[in-house]
Image 1 (cartoon, rainbow, N blue to C red):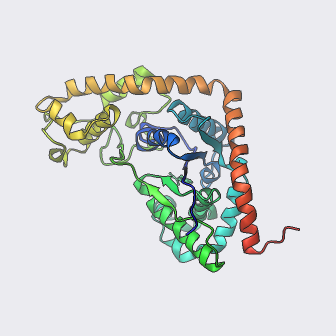
Image 2 (cartoon, rainbow, N blue to C red):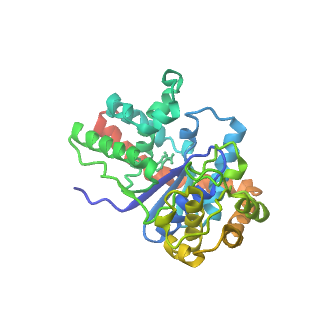
Image 3 (tube, rainbow, N blue to C red):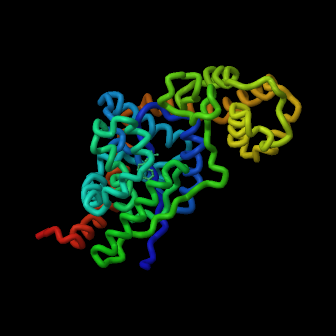
Length: 336
Ligand code: TRP
């Protein structure tokens, strides 16, 4: 195997608000990678339009995700930050991968089945080949490491299958074997109204989530309103198996304070939720307040943000273009 430089790539869709779930489950973990790896973070607007987006809303959401990343500590001096549509290599390589991936592979993708629901014939073709574009995102940079949540593991396996089939179809050793980066206790943040559902930007209830655009008062209010039960808190997380809402709040507390969930339980053992929620509200405001404030500030500086994305796109293009040229040669596209 050729030695590939350790390069990290990850993406976030600009559809709806960034939530506490995006922060604790993903972006927060990326910040620490910036010092040890070459890092590329992408706002995946091409992926977003696999379901229809209102154009002005899409533009705003793209800036919002970029602002959220920067406010959370992604440093444009250390990482490349850009939006996908500005670098044409993504779409071009995705086409080639459409010809490498097999229908049978895509038919197995659970995210497509979930998103398309009962009316598969009415889903966009883009939604179906979404994973090929994701593979192109990663492999256009010959990235080797991809931090993702558990729900994206199947897509990463497909990326590996595509890379391997491309290499063997053309008898080359060109695309690396991509490794998922799964973070220790990657926090799966659940809805504040229903502890069995993932915190989601598409949930109709605003009180189900904390948005990275919420101000301090709203964050505190949503925590105070979070659903709980009437039992006191137990000594360890194992005793919360059947208490999804309580477990979620403990996990959020643990993630925000960088502690083990069991330690948080032990601290509040025997206490009711009034005390716990008061402390959690305070902690949430302390950790998230500065991020949400910085994010609002950045959102009011659109020219600055757009400049970062433009510069990021130029740098991304410098990495991807020569790789795409080599792909053209491998595949047999004439470049006189
Ligand atoms: N599919 C990912 C998600 O929904 C977003 C994404 C697009 C991505 N391209 C990527 C993540 C490349 C990692 C690498 O979360």
